[in-house]
Amino acid sequence: MAVENAYPWGAGFQMRLLALLAQEPKNMFDLIEPQYFTGNPIYVEIARVLKGVYAKVSKGTQISRHSLIELLRASVGKDDAWPVYKETVKRLYKIPLSDKEILFTQAREFAKEARYRNALELGEKYVTGRQYDKVHQLLDETRAAVNGAGAEAVKWSLLPHPRDFPFKEIEWTIDTILPTDAVIVLSGVEGVGKTLQALSWARAITEGTEFLGYQAWPRKVLYNGIDMSRTNLGNYLRMMRWDPDDDFRFISQWTGEGFTPSMLDDPAGVAWLCKYAKKYKPVMFFDTVRDYFSGEENSSTDWKPIADAARELRSLGATPVLLAHPDKSGKFTVRGSHLIAQKADIPYIVRKERWKDRELCVLQCPSKNRVGSTAFTLAMEMQFIPMPNDTPYFRFRERPDWKPGKMSNREGELDSVVAYVEEHPDCAQKQIEDALHMGGRKVKELVAAGEEEGRLHREKGPGKTWLWSTADDARGKVVDFDALDIPASGT
Image (cartoon, rainbow, N blue to C red; front, side, top):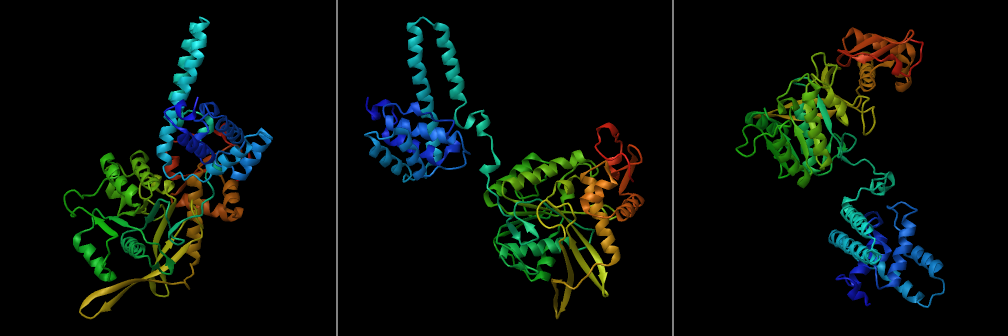
């Protein structure tokens, strides 16, 4: 029987399927079987060898043309058809696969038809032998295999493996400060300069310039400032001497019907934001994030949809930057529940500090950071330069000679301890010492200070051990001592 007449899928189509099996084994391995290429023993043998190789190696590893030729040579030996084998393999690797998605769809149909044809041929033998139960069993098995073929297959081999995803360097939107694939929290008390900093980042990003020497790469920016008045926005832009280009967009309560702020605890609002995230992959600022949900501020349950929405936007290519207020003590990143800070990739703290009779704005990254260095600190001075008969000119100016005072160092160390305890509740002092590489005396002083300030809470553990948690985690919690794997002695 001629190849062209074996199926409605001709020789050219089958050749492209072989090329797809050779070049895209991950998608084709569990879909195509050698016996499907009825009518052409050369295609059958090439498919058999390919399946044999990819059964032993990662499906993300593509076998080379030269390797396939050598494997076929070992398989068929001095077969008279060897020149045809060799020429067929060369053609396989020259076929462009620009229409892969269409081919995958057709391959699934090809596989279904092949499976049913094979089942009918075998079923006819069962009927002849009056083995009717086997006919029903065969058809049920074929139906299950067909429905599980291709993208819908439930097979262990189709699950992702780390080798399928090569190591990827961190991609930055603003070098060292703002990773592209991340959820960022920018927290600070009222008047510390969060909004001016966020707008300065937005300007550097849309213009593809620098922020205080840190290179920014061009992207679109959607700034959600639900409570920022028209006048305030205008004043900010005039002070910055910034006329935003078309890559900057702003949404507030006054920006018109159809473009009102999308709440992050409203599925419809999140869906609207996701459309823009998927299409344009912008940096999305939310100033402030507390204004974007109506739930209880102290409830981690009410905060969870906000964290989920931010991570969904990130998964679609956007970079959510959530501006927040810390608690009244200024010690915790986000007021109320700390779920957002826990789920953020980088929770930044912005604080004011007096230095050489100047008021500085200090941007710090605490120890809990899933992206880059934990030691990042940027000291800036917010300068409002008077201009004759005009709005003052605003700029940030870096103060690289700034050195944190003794109290700043201590606060930073305490922040590190609290962040670790927040991530590892019910931990012993020895665990904190080992994780943060601090001496026992220093950690003892820091946890005592944290307890005095109401940030940390301790409970009696086994032996002489104290177990530390954050004050919020400690409320209403019962500790299971038997489940803990910690030393039985020590402070």
